[in-house]
Length: 116
Image (cartoon, rainbow, N blue to C red):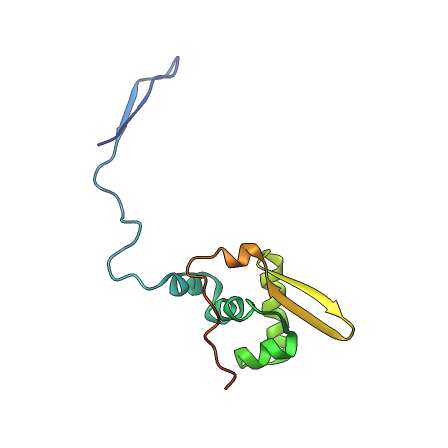
């Protein structure tokens, strides 16, 4: 058991202790790290992070995710805003790739999505 004692001048002595073991960090029956991340970011954005291990154009990302170009662009913009994806322009193409921060997420692995 851990105790915390607070003895500040002009205040009463306070002793704090844990009432129990606390919540487990990984509850029994919890899903994978990707499932937990999908609960926060959304499944499509997690899939985009997986796909963007390799560089893709917006249309290539849309094909891999099976969404419209506008939707793929919006997901890439959200991930870019969080620092998880970089976007560069190469002529008329816009290229997206996962950043080092995006690669540090729990359960990072190679993309497993098929084109169709």
